[in-house]
Length: 227
Image (cartoon, rainbow, N blue to C red; front, side):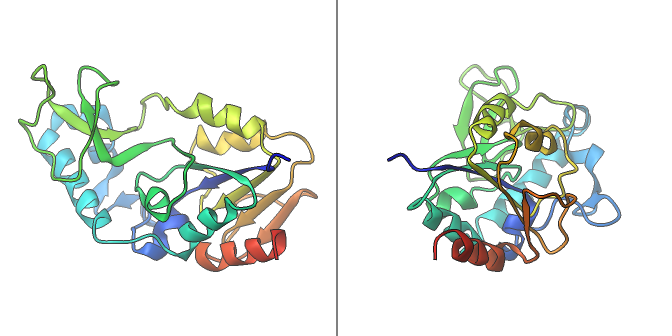
């Protein structure tokens, strides 16, 4: 008998307990920078050094943290479900926890790509500097989906969501589109579990709220679904 398909949509709250800082603080700044100065193609063209250093700092921080119990609990669920993780996070903590089916909507910090060929993607764990180029001499850039850029993995995420037997939402405000629109693609009556201290979506008969952070919330989820 095939396993039921569990789609898990994760946001910044998934990784916060590992020490990864959330995307934006209350005043809209990201590590002291206006997001328009570090997360758009125009910003990169205007001041590539600033943008590269911003992501170098994020990458250095990522290398200093480890997956938390929440990430590992999702791996545990693979024993009982076909778990697909659709994440808005650019860290690799799901991978390092052992999860096997992951879609990164917004790119990955530990990858870079050519500025001229978006399909030329390289694994990258060091700092990325001006002068780091692809085989054709084109500058490399962070493999991050900046504001205004196409979310290439969205089509795959939509197809997966349509197949969901249950949907789990962890640590995302459900305010960032197009990712927030994924919930519209699940079938009617599909059970939804929302793990968040301050749930981002309104109540309906299909939704079970687990008002906890990711680590504790995923433990509760396991008890609900498996124990």
